[in-house]
Length: 52
Image (cartoon, rainbow, N blue to C red; front, side, top):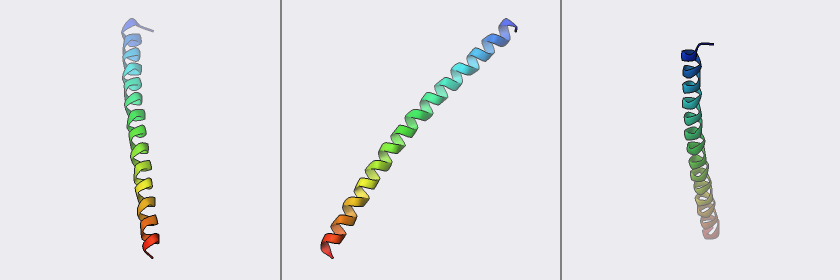
């Protein structure tokens, strides 16, 4: 394998690793937002049930 090709492959892997890290962080944020939304939905449902 040529030095250029090896460097290119390493660069691609580093880029993919950065993208993976960013995607994982985004997923964690989305999961936290989803959990907060679910908690709020439950609170509203409970409030509505108490009024009924």
